[in-house]
Amino acid sequence: MPKLTMNFIKTKIVPPTKGQVDFYRDDELTGFGLRVRESSMTYFVEKRVNGKNRRVTIGKHPLWTPDAARNEALVILGKMASGQDPVKEKSKKQVLSLTLRQAFEEFMESKEFRPLTRYNYPRPPAARSG
View 1: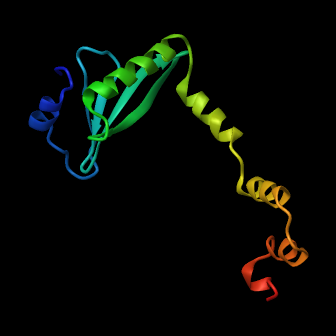
View 2: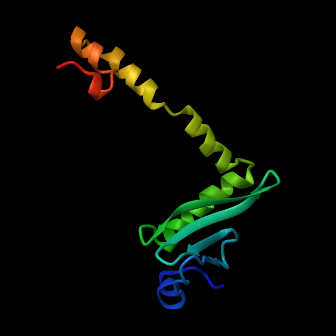
View 3: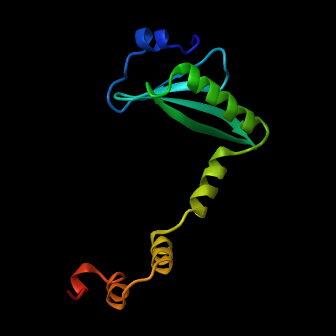
């Protein structure tokens, strides 16, 4: 494959049939590529980290240009080369996020409510008194 450029993407890439996925890998930056489906194209980076193959999505084409995606791929590849696993980091962020229940409880504690409001808010709409 040659270098992924706008010209290459516009002239050489043909969307595959429904259900198929084609991968185009950049010759100049090892690990950088473009995943092509019937209706979308997505830039990605892949590398082996701590003994496991990892593929990380950068963003969709044309929202990301090939040059911007390549620059982001360099950053991600640098982190992966130092042993950082982006898949594990993403799962850590998801664990740290609030649940809906926790957000609701924080909301209820953050304001002063009238007694009827404090009583009705946690109840389902059908059970509320008017």
